[in-house]
Amino acid sequence: MKAALSTVTAGVVAACLLAASNAAAFTASTPIAAPVARTDVIRVAMEPQGQVKPQFQRRMVRLATNEEPGTVIVDTNNKYLYLVEGNNRARRYGIGVGRDGFGWSGVVKVGRKAEWPGWTPPPEMIVREAKKGHKLPAYQEGGEDNPLGARAMYLYRNGNDTAFRIHGTNQPWSIGLNMSSGCIRMMNKDVMDLYDRVPVGTKVIVVGPGNKQGEVSYQDRGVDVLRTLFGG
Image (cartoon, rainbow, N blue to C red; front, top):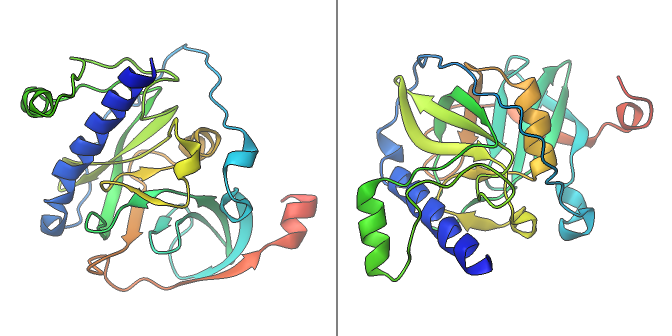
């Protein structure tokens, strides 16, 4: 099982690598909204808290920004994803991002969403990886062993799937690290929380290499202690 999981994970990394080479060509537009894929599958894939550094646990924070509530800001430098809530408030999640040479930046939108997403590697990838000694499945069903984790939000631009995703992971130790080839990974419990709060069409600003996101103003002023203690 471990060998198979390693092979599938390697394949997903390769898929994101293909997307990274085209990142500079993206320009913002409204995607064609696809129906949200929902299933009746009930699985538990919550990662032990001890595997993730405390600073990357989900927090309610004070965030000064001029972005509209509901906007997602991905800070690849500091490994945080913010969901803007307005009134200088946000939810902050720890993330794993692209390793050196595979980071990217830009403004995209959530084009579609999927629960326990499956993964179909393209035929050319299967052939290419086979030459490296990696045998990829024709299709990997969604579930705890799938490297896309519990949820996936597919990032679109110009109505096209960029091949970048915000998704869960079965490697929680990778949160806070530069490990992927461009996709944004979250702990399963966090991606499930974000998934329920972010509809198709949500604006996603990815701040990273090249600064192709343009001007974006935000300042993390730390944990919102009152909200953390008393909610709201």
